[in-house]
Image 1 (cartoon, helix red, strand yellow):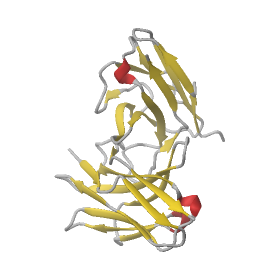
Image 2 (cartoon, rainbow over the protein chains, first blue to last red):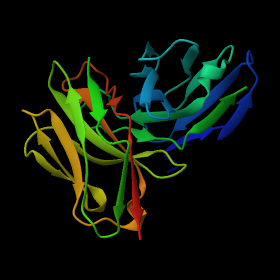
Image 3 (spheres, rainbow over the protein chains, first blue to last red):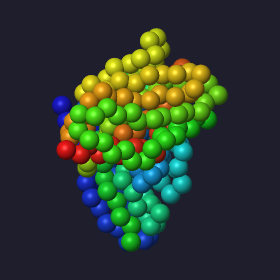
Length: 115
Length: 116
């Protein structure tokens, strides 16, 4: 059981470039999430997917798009990267997110630097 | 909407000393409460959670937390810390009930550094 995996681990982009962060989980979870972590700000929710085929905005969605490709995979796309998007990005998954005891499991993160 | 405030950004402590990491929250609805730990260059791992029932909850690695509804607090404690407890700790909340789809609101984090 790999849990939640993310690729790449590190990435450096120039302003205006695009890229997709990949996330996959092998726990048969329904719900998946994308967070960004910035120093002194904790983790903030970018987008989430309550179940396969659905996505919705979180707290900081501007500049990002997501795709729930299937039950296992949830990708995050930056169409035109900006320095303000320099951050560490975490993907997480849980069983039915509506159920209180379903904890979120986190991937190892992707460190993104936008120059 | 919910908000979480972790009152200390950094907490230095000596090995085998007790520690308390403070967390206050604000919410207009009932909430579930969580503490996560992040070791260097890793993802987050759940330490413990409060859903209902006893206000004192025990988690992994000897940590415990007490939910105080009147003070809207959920402080994390450990009676004797080890070097291996050095990490960043996050308090998080989510609305009770099913409509939030598990969305968590995190505090800013507290870096616990245990010195020998």
